[in-house]
Image (tube, rainbow, N blue to C red):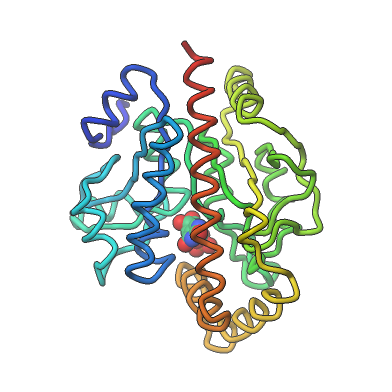
Length: 306
Ligand code: PSU
């Protein structure tokens, strides 16, 4: 069966066709991850960082049922302010198309669409994972199973400490996804640089990571890669500051019975309130930092493929 081809912007289509460096970006972070106008400023800022580092940004979303890779400025504006936008993981895309809905794409949906568009590198903030208490709730993000079947390299700041990090790493091992930490031994925990758990591998340059990606695909593994890039020192929060806040938000969600796809947006918003905006500031900086690394990887990867 021929697979669907999303609609690429002219700039992205040209870059993909010529084998140039392209970095995919998700849109759930815009529609559900941050409040307006910080979400719009971040989306534009992240695209700018990618350009400054020599690559073409390709923000991915579903707009009125159409699969889109590379958005216009007015479309970013609209997505950032839209009220009833769907949060779509990979499994939700087909229905959003049938209903002609607009949707913010999560990591899993963005990986899927990036792959259909021929883009191998994708930058986000934090990947979804195994939620705390998953032994009762079974709440495990589809981001992890997508990483096990789609060959995109996802650059993230680790996974949020709203999750069970040890179980998330176990699950990635089961899914055959290499976890590569950039310039550190420790697996980062989104707002903080260390989680106390070691990543599988450490690589120290974007070129080495691009090479590892290239070889991983050449081996026919068929899986994605997780590139874990710690939040910059200057923007990092301390465990003392944020861990209690995270625990309070998780408890509140539990009491209110919030689960499934509402859980992560609820926790991010609540942690932002409880930390007086400090967590949002950190989130913005870590996404830009990931965009920088992803662009550098894309430049090295494009040179390698030629
Ligand atoms: N990174 C951020 N903010 C976010 C997300 C990532 O800095 O909001 C989103 C991604 O789209 C990711 C989703 O796929 O959170 C995880 O949601 P869930 O845990 O429901 O799978």
